[in-house]
Amino acid sequence: MANEKKIALREITEDTVRKITALEVAENQKGFVALNSISLSQALFSHNAWYRAIYADDTPVGFVMLHIDTDKAEYFLWRYMIDHRYQGKGYGYKAMELVIDYVRGLPEAGQLLTSYIPGTGDPSGFYLKLGFVETGEMEEEERVLALELQQ
Image 1 (tube, rainbow, N blue to C red):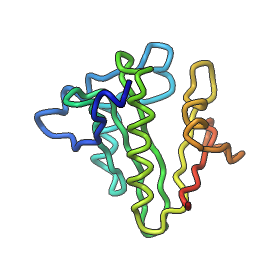
Image 2: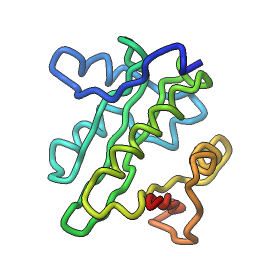
Image 3: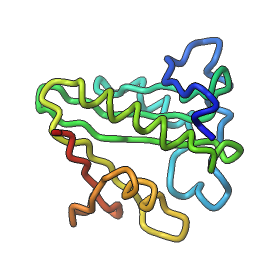
């Protein structure tokens, strides 16, 4: 389980980028999240992208990317993935708790938004377990979820 390994969010470096771009979700999840190489490419052209590799001890197991707009106090979970080999071990849940704690520390952070494409194998159950709720809004073909951060 995740409590056996230290879960951490680490910067991606020249030395680690290949390992991070090699991570992949399960075959039936590939329609729900972009490849990490695409996400990193998009991040290079976004002034609002914040991204980290997810590690279990010294093993890269996933990737997270946020869209952060502190001027508007808008925080959006843009990408989130755990490699298929490391799913079901609690790493994703623990890493998401770290992401949520990070966002809570940002200026005027009232909520964290995300979205997902509905379908068999979609991540909605994962997000609902973390406390996200359906907003009823759609962003193109994706359902929007919100997590209230005020305690």
